[in-house]
Length: 608
Image 1 (cartoon, rainbow, N blue to C red):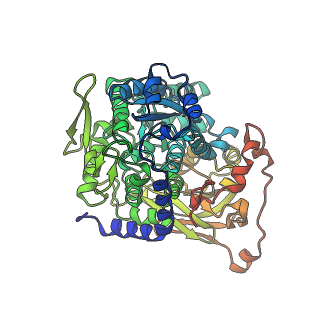
Image 2 (cartoon, rainbow, N blue to C red):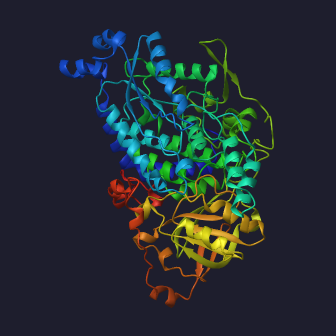
Image 3 (cartoon, rainbow, N blue to C red):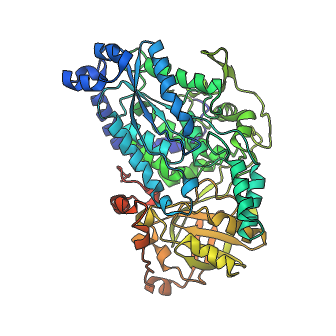
């Protein structure tokens, strides 16, 4: 691509070179799995008969073995707002497939848990590893070898990364991700945040808090703030796995249904049985991964993707590193302000021009690889369009708006909210950490203060309630990494630390845990690796040690004399209570096998 920014080109080339052998081995495996003719035609008669026994009107087509058969891998459940709309999707997909001479079967279901429901609860300690369970469940779903392409129905935090990791293990199959869309806008995010902070200091009742939350999370669809779930949708579009313009169309709407049906028709077109074969293992290459990182920076997306994108890349034989995120962040401008990095929600972002406008801006500035392959066809320029409903069955695409509809929410590259993506990687004697400063006031990018050390987020709330944190402080929360307790998100800290900062104190968080996309305005050095539970230096920190979190210099320092620091023994903590109950005993194998956070925190093929 002639106008590609030199840093984008350099980072991509570094990734390509370091991944060469792993990527070549991966591509050789998916090429070996490619087969001419429908996959089910290779099954024995008994195998095949089992596969279509209950398929009613589709039985003859499946028996004939000449037409595409599409797998539906579904994360539906009706407890979670984001996944409830998926109940209807298999019906829409099957009808659309029949209309183009194909068939579709629900190949399997995968679990879908919600960090919003489990936040601060024991179940949150299963959350990160649910990604691995979803990948494994995807593999089981596809293991019958009946399918020529797959449609993946999933939305939220770990579900989409898990589905994609599983899809890449069947990289010879085309894959289309089918979103459900965000719920319509409810209580404004600023008001929700105010009620949460009032509750944190005892000024709002539980009834007031519950009413505010219920007005915010009020119907089908994803939560409308820009956390991991909506970052997932952005990534699938920028990485060429969604139909163009499909990420942020609300559920239960005619355009949403039309896009779902069109995804089925498109999946039937891109199998190895036709002339436009598009296997997912070829679409997800180094350029697609870099485009995903660029999109994350440009939108201020969730820091959970520092874990997920590394794990996704590894599943495709690609070695992505934190240093790549840092280098790309230095040249990618922040183009969006969506809560918690602003007051708008994703519906406002979409109405202002959304991904179509943003992709066009980034392409024109040379900040995206435009020469990628996508499920829609060659070239990312196919995604600088908006989807409209031309008729009940037909979608038309119109060019993206040339100007943002709301410059308080979405801006062009020439007038960004900030000139870089706001992500930094920190290094120092405490280890390697990440910090997201896109919403942090610039006068808080450097915080130096005495440490107060905890091993559980509930302990922080207790100290706050007792008035022990009403000062400049670096709150250290350790033993929160993948090996210790599954690396839960620590959202309970956000209101507490925000209150302290608003009182004028200089406050920062240092943790080997996660804070997701909702860490907001308090500087947080997260994902510290190595984690305390495996001997990381965070276990040496004591109350009163002066810690300096410096997002400008990219450092994480502790002011302790070297001889004293070297002679200190690591603190320990009893993690038994995090290893049993709520199913956690079943996840011991995941905790014991987990890669460190900087390698994705997972159990599959971590980069060397």
